[in-house]
Amino acid sequence: MAVSTEARAIVRVAFGGQCGYCGVSETSVGGELEIDHFHPLAAGGSDDIENLVYACTACNRFKGDYAPVHDAPESLRLLRPQRDDFGVHVEETVHGRLIGLTPRGWFHIQRLHLNRPQLVERRHWLHVLQAQRSELSRAREAEARLRRENEVLQGEIARLRAAVAALLGGSER
Image 1 (tube, helix red, strand yellow):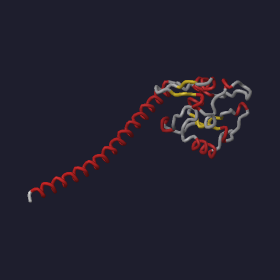
Image 2 (cartoon, one colour; image 1 turned 90 degrees about the horizontal axis):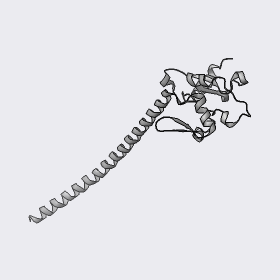
Image 3 (cartoon, one colour; image 1 turned 180 degrees about the horizontal axis):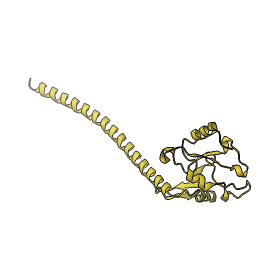
């Protein structure tokens, strides 16, 4: 059964137009992403909104119909987007690689191939961009501070000039 247009729209908005597994956006791929059933229909999953994940084609393909049974060890379970705390299980290096902090995080990375060269490069450049934004923000704050200090100093210079002019004007009498 196909996911309804309404459910698709809800899931798309809920995921902000980004893949729930790797974070790639619609603008990055040039179109809408796919709807993945976290718990596949073939394994008894449903079309309920809570079971749907907005996913890029690659992540959807790598995940496939994978569905461990509920009593499977944690190390064989995928992280559930928007439910599991990704940061507890996975860490991202400044170079864009993902590192599993837990067996479950490691499994998630491996199953979905989240260290694909394209994703690593994308994450790396996002780190570079974030660092440049931070540097630009600090530079703007410094510029604003220097402008305020300059205004204070210009006022002080004007006050001193007036005082000197008053002294010079008073000494000529």
